Length: 159
Image (cartoon, rainbow, N blue to C red; front, side, top):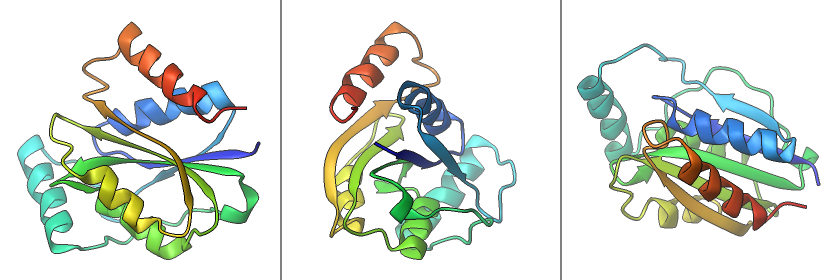
């Protein structure tokens, strides 16, 4: 099964999860970058990202190459910002118009996921969502427990 892991990360949490999934599945990996990819302190990043999420702004992305028809399974990961999947991932979804695919979703958050997965699934209507999960502070909580959480989740759709 040809698999892609598509993700956006700001502070490295989703990148950590995406790398682990890529290695376990031998998947292709596509990291999304916004055109405005400058470093921000924690508070500035919260206002920047949360403001976009609340106002439903889809930031422009740096060029990327992705053909959904080349994959049997697409795994998409996003940080949770103000209860929404990060707007850069929403930009990606609106640009690619993925439909009719098997999809697995993950979100990373600091403790407040809200209804981010529900909103994420709504953005992917017309697809088969086969697995979903959330990871709380993966960079800070990396170790055996996180490794096991990833392994257990990947078992739901590998092979």
